[in-house]
Length: 322
Image: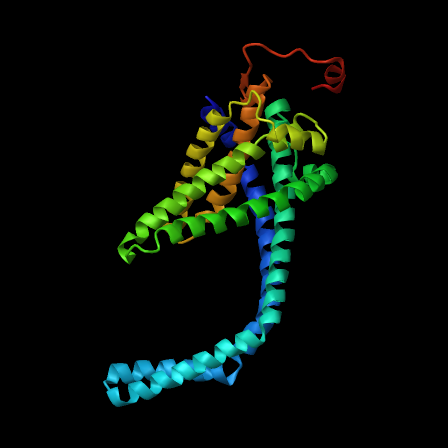
């Protein structure tokens, strides 16, 4: 039933996809501009060097001689390409410090972009919660502004952990999968990719299991940041394996929909499927939280889901209108 209820909540909040998309597009455009500003000086220096021009001209001459059949000129052209390529490698080695600082700058931009993205995720989650609990149509930017302090605290804690986990995940999977199959011939590359993608999906679902309760605990549970952090990693009574299997299926479906949407629409479908993916994950997290905590919630305008045994409200919750 969690999948069915999550889908209903997703459809009920589908208009939120466009607001989430616009927010992410603005962040992506700003981040892209910062990336270009960092990397362009080195690219201009590289492409403006005589060695780079020699390499390009050598490749053109090599292809021309290959097409026209002038075999006597091929050897000399190949030597020209090799000399130019060696010079470019030396140029890169001489600018190693600048390249490292450039990579540091790009990672810093990525961190800031992820920080603001997490703020948007918090606001999106808060809007979903308002709709599920109160049938309130909360404005996205107003919600973000009112919850900016809480969203910043969440982002400061979540983003470094998420980036560290993702970096370790990709590095470990690459080393294990491609090193393990390195002795196999190229015809086994599809097997390597299959193992890599499968392991990546399982590891991503594992990450989602241990972070799924973070936002619901902060927003619906009204916990303090440290309290919510402890709550999300405490798996006691949370049916971890069932939630994990649900996330595996959900991630597989999201992966398939995004690949199909991007490939068959030449990338245009990704404008809709990518923000929708984040939205449905948030919907599932809140449905899972509401069901486990035995709380009532709306899945659409006319349908209220009630637990078999409702938890009585405390005096504080009653006067708060929860």
